[in-house]
Length: 498
Image (cartoon, rainbow, N blue to C red):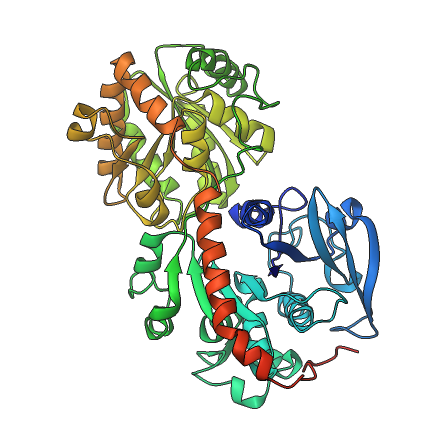
């Protein structure tokens, strides 16, 4: 079976978050299930530099303001279609933000172009490529299911994955005429969202199947509290919604062969982590104290991630043999607050503002515990990496965190079970209490090592999720096969394509 993935970022070529990790790892996992995935991505500078032996599939005379080419090639072991549209994507830095951290003002046109080309690929634009499934990721690809829906019969099955419902791609209604959709699509039952155009809403309304990245988050987003004003749409299509946990790339995240670690290790040699811990303490300017429990954070600094909760919890833990190493970037106020915390207590708090992939690996390989105090978390990859590396996660009981971390409560400890520590609700008091529970186990080295072994043996890879996606793809393709076979060929619709 052939499938097309449409996504705005993909590891290792361009990454701002977990979306890229998923997009980069899932094709190889699905290949083991007999599904061949090609991925359509924008032609950012980093993608264009990495693309190998690319050929032109199609040339567009005019695509949202300029000429463009659709290229096919490979990069980093990935089969790619690349939308080479320099007027839209040849820009430095973050794929969505300008140098001042503001959204590019033409993001609606940039990702409408990506979606239109994705729909054309779904309908056979590339010779020899006839996908049974088109998989649209997040709002940047959200128009793809709508374009295929309104393009007539004979289209492939569509799957839309919500990686984070908080990011929806909402734009002024003035963009609608350029999208290549009929007037009827601009309606409450279509892509209209409070008088504007909702790219993610388009996916939720018109995809044949909707997935999100954990079962608990799939339930949470059906409620007004977590539904981000789209809970009504989701409840109406709840029979098409499912939650499939993310996994992590077992080759990229492998403590036995990680080039970013001073000392590699495995579940039988966790004592080797002490070398990494010392290196991590040195990197963050913390005392080389083997007996202190070194907690770490690798995160975007934002309200969602609950880092203000951590700041408020720190005073409650004063006097404990505890260190904190934080690496991340995000809200200026949080960045400043953590810098101040490090200045006030440099022997206990170390901070690196920014993101570095190698440092993230060292954090996972050297920290004793990883803190994830998110107010909501669709899945989370940090806690999965932490378990793989024997850094016990301390997490809020929300979304995918609740689904992936087994709480080491009293009964779990008695049964020699557990892979980390959960707390609820996401607030300073419960977080401090969870850290206190972890400290109590830390004081018993044998019990701590048992939890480490449990965590490192947890199934955090892509095998199970890929099997679920493969089952979903095959089920959908089987349902649509009679419809596709009976449908006449349709000319693709689209504004400003050629």
